[in-house]
Length: 224
Length: 211
Image (cartoon, rainbow over all chains, first blue to last red; front, top):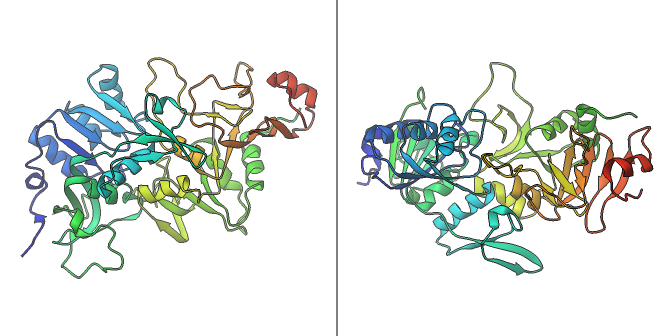
């Protein structure tokens, strides 16, 4: 019997190693898998490359990872916010590397990794600082920039419900990067409010099929 | 001269958004446009974090922090609205499905180049978000901005000096002093506020604008 459910967030992240690349879902705090991140912090590993839309908000989630000095590099689209003080301090101290990627290119590069594409030509960023030094091509009269996929060792995402085969549904705008990160990482770990019996999720509305998910942890509704 | 305030600017932009349009309103000033879209017009507001059919802010105490807009403010979803992931969201822009986006700007060139993401100051932490995707992805990109900086320099310029967000992507500029079209043909005045002449606007912008 295949059962991808894990008893605790700690057990689910127990093999994330120093130097790992880790995608973390969430747009701001919506969809941020706080309990998985707390478990990752508790593991004590560092030198991580983090892929997230932002670079932390307040004290939770990615902000806490940065505060604890665990992040070597962050790949994101929008690091600077009113409550990104832990990133700001690390960046100004030169202790964190930043790769700034336009948000749609970030999504497209993650999706390309999940879909097994070697690269993509995207119109976004053409002629700007963020395309400097990159290969470009004119296709059908429009200019494009060559961008490479973003793969990761792990993805930590948050969903509303999952089952023991790893099928997932999400809640409202907390969906954001979850479905594409699940496809792009070698090991995807989802924290969910509830693990439901097989068949309880309507197959017509499953957003992420279980093939993209290796581990599911029930966090419960109160804390999720 | 009858300079428009921010609400009047938002009202002016709203007048040009037709029924049935799929629209993304950028963070900051453009979000005000939503307040002036007539209720009898079906207009679909997209927010790039993953919703279409965005409604107004919820009542205090009714916020759901998993239902937010791109500015990370609590919003609501209209009946018929939908959620989707980020790759679909940006496909809506890049794929040319979004009719209009309204963005703020530091500068817009007469040819429609946009600078709105980075001042280029050394030491500033850069952040781009969805600005570059929106600018070049929507079928029409409207800019909403004060025409002059606080020190009186025109933000409608011959060529942008700030780092670019996108090339030749803006079609229209809605400002406190008037509305302008920009593009391959250069800039043209569509309308000026009461009490401002073509001669005045040429002086203020330093551009050889025509009506």
